[in-house]
Image 1 (tube, rainbow, N blue to C red):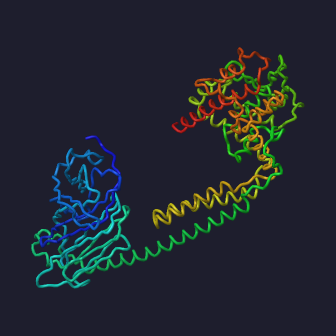
Image 2: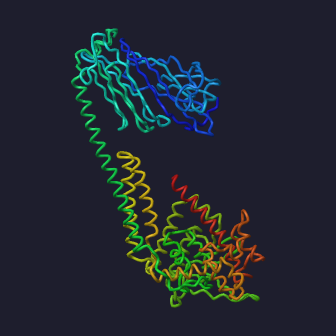
Image 3: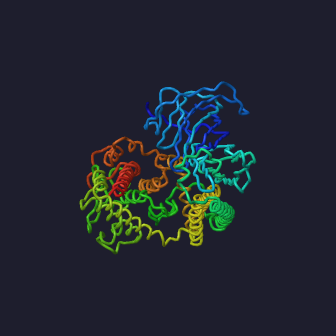
Amino acid sequence: MPGKALATDYRCSEVDLLASVETDGSVHMTDQRIFDLTEGESAPERLKWLYDGFIEGAEVTIERVRMAPVDGDGALAGEWTELPETTFLLPWRGGGGPEHDAWAYDKFQHTLYAFVDAMPERVMFEVVYRVEDAIEAFDDAADFQWLYVPQDYDVALADVRAEVVLPVAADDSVKVMENVYAWGHGPADGEVDIRSDGTVIFTDPAVEPTMYAKARVMFPVEWLTNLSEEARLANQGTLQYYWTSRYEETWVDTDTSQEVIRLGLALGLLGLSAALLLAALIVWWRWGRERPPAFRDDYWMNPPADAMAPAVLGRLWRWNHESPDDIVATVLDMVRRGVLEVRDDELVIPAAGEEPAKRVESGSAAALAAPRAADVGADDAPDAADAVNAEQAALDAATLRLLRMVATGGRTLSRAKLSALAHEHPRDLLEASAAWQRRLTALVEPYGFFDTASRRAQHVVLGAAIFLAVVAVAAIIWVSWRAGVLALATAAAMGVLGNYTMRRSPEGNDIAAHAKALRNWMRDGGWSLEGDKLAPDERAALIPYAYLFGALKSLGFGASADAEGADAGDAAMAVRGKAPMAAGAAPADEAAFLATLAPVFSQSLDEALRAAHKRAEVS
């Protein structure tokens, strides 16, 4: 049969176990369990029991498996249905089963499976089995160890009752903790009751899947009147009462003290979590809230800071987080200023020492300002005396170095070259991109966009959150999973607070306010209403910012760039509506050209960086 997915869409609401110890050292078992199916869910296609944890050499033999519907009180509400036995097949461990209702025992994994197509919503299963050689005999005592709830069961077991009936000799009687000893291991709220009639009862209100429950009973070996000679001589010369009782008492004392320690640690962890969360809230209240900016208008139609490169503003916009968007915005700005040129489907990169092509007035299009020689960088500028913007010069130089590396020494850069470099030399591309980001970081730092005290406070909060998360994971493993999960949730909350603790400086906040107002103006239709009042070069100067703010589509651009398979040249030509541009030609609409180029170049760069990351990880 094909394998079928199994889900724990049921629960075990009552477990009643009976172990009758026979005088020959075997144990006759009766296992009754009530299963409640989840309302509205299909019945599980199989149930399983694990019968393991007996002494070495014990052998389990299943005698009978049957089921019957029960009412809400656990009383039988119908007739018993006997399930036939079938031979277990190894593929059934992963799913599937026989084509008819049956049970099968996997003796290698000590697991019993019951396969039933349809079950009542509340059903009792009864398993009768026998365990041969389950009792270990010593000179003075018989030792019975029974793992009546194994660890890692499919679902939690509720209301567990395990009863052991001893074969009390006719001429003897039960003397509690003198000749009959019993210990239980498992849930802390479990109980053990030794009765005078030779019955020992173990009860557990609930046993979670991650827990177990084990019984150990010692009684006079003389009560096993039919024990085989081989079993009687197996541990000859060993006294069990004295050493086992002291071992178990020490175990119980140790377990109790460990439980007290675990409880204290759990309470301490919860107290620490509450204190750290309160401290994080205070830190955020003191250093994390933004100051009111001097600029309060909702709309603005000029660059946020005229002397600031779009990439520098991009870092301010996203709280100094690195992004390939800053490379794209810088390339757009360099194309606008004539440092770079788009010809056919490629970016044309000026050689070192070569002055880039300048756009001139053509037709009715307004002339764009000629690029400054310093825009190309110290190593590219023909006349350093024209360097009036050192920041822009440094960023342009870093961008040209990046593009020349990607172009592998050529004068042009296409999507194919970018993709080839990402697949053939992924680390080179990643290192070049990282170097560019480091250069941008060096340019951003002198601005002091972000409050120094709040940055220190953020580091402290995030460090405390990481520390608490590590402690929480350790607590889940060794102390208490509930306390650990609560501490882990607190660490996550502190991480969120820490992320929002850093605030901008007053100057940075004012520039960001202008940027938000410009974004609002673009997004809310100001471009279409007032865009015709802007000169063409002013419109083009705003496109890199529109790209950084994600507002290109709000300006009515980007439709042609969305065409599947479009490249930079195709998109550019679609906007220009003319043949590939020769050197010196001016675009019909510079803003539309840049707006169409932006998503195409961005997609190419993102795909190349993703491919480079994947290939670098593989290599």
